Length: 321
Image 1 (spheres, helix red, strand yellow):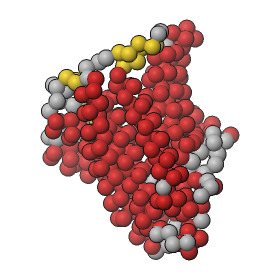
Image 2: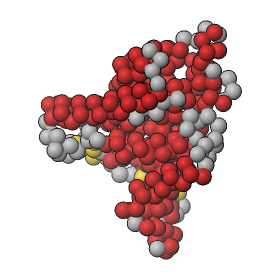
Image 3: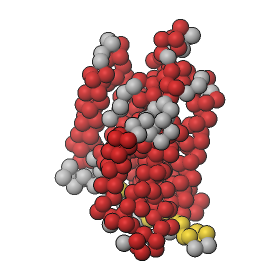
């Protein structure tokens, strides 16, 4: 068992970082909404699912054949733009229809949580009964939608001494890091970012200072949706398939990453995503791939038991404006 871990250390590390990058991007949506509204947006995973379908539609519409190198980067970039636009709009629509009416009426957080679960089920079943069947021509029972057979990545491997990394994993890692840096700069250096942080810290005072809460909440959902869309495009690059329930397990793991890093902490979500991805891959090499999900949820239980504030601990509400 230990020999397998040693032999698979570098491949597991590379796989863990690329998978963790997807977890981290998706976790950002959870952590930003929680930081501003103190709400776990369980429908966020289904926004990610919408993004994977947008990525599938984009690739099929382009009708590209075997791609690699800069052509593959271009295809991924275009797919990320389309998926990000679709998920941003979907997330804003979700906020307006499922959460804003409750917020205006001063409803309890439990009511908002129930609304989130209901919205999640609605989106999933909408795609199961309408999009999968009518748009893509696949039965609900089949569910899983691969890319057309003529589309294939041109597998290029980059050598870094003893380490070999495929081009798709490089694109996933650096694409995710680029989005994370952009988000960090947006939150910390722009006027809207200051509005998000001030609303998270003290919404009543933020209103007195002229902050438009509805606008801030909409922007928060939009930014989280964009991150989910880019995560969906990168997920599609790696796995080249989707289904209407793809967000369920991945969403729980992204939530685990957010809790691991410190729910409400943007940089904590990034750290939690990468740590969870690495732990999953290392656990797979030690105990077998069938234990990968067990490792992820064991991490969630242990964090909630012994360090519920996560790795970094500081939430967005406590961040300095």
